[in-house]
Length: 113
Length: 117
Image (cartoon, rainbow over all chains, first blue to last red; front, side, top):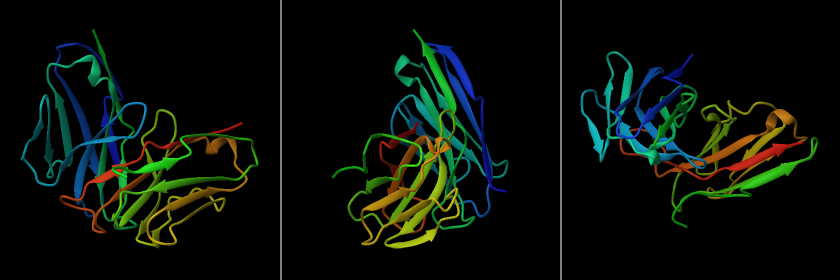
């Protein structure tokens, strides 16, 4: 059965800390892995990863994929209170359809001032 | 519009009532998805459309759930005889192409928050 597992499920840090969020997966016919940030509304897209070893960066956020070990990490440096959110990892596989995104349960990040 | 639009944003339904949730995807997007997200959980797949064709409905939890996209743009998710366990956020998402892979980002709407009392 296809699955995506994120860890930790929740994390509390202080402003300025660096955090690493983990996502491991087992998916039939892997296509890509996506990271989303979800506050109290729609998940907003952060990164799409398709190739191993190539780091994607956007400001203080970065992510990398390891297709051999079947995981990805999302790093946030110099965290700010505005980074507080649920971070969702999702994998596109071919499972039962061409379009199915399989989500993990998310990591709830709380950044304290 | 610029993004995926969903309505209503919030819906309170009495148990047994039928509800209809609407999704306007980004114009020109071929793929449309519905997800159900319970409190504290990640979104769970319900169904997928490629244009007007419903290619996968394996995630619909029961035959009380029905989705359509008759003209390949706007989609409606209908839930008949709502139950308390149907309370969740229903997220709609769309993407430009049919083939989900490199460079084909999936964009989410803000969700319809359904509470069944």
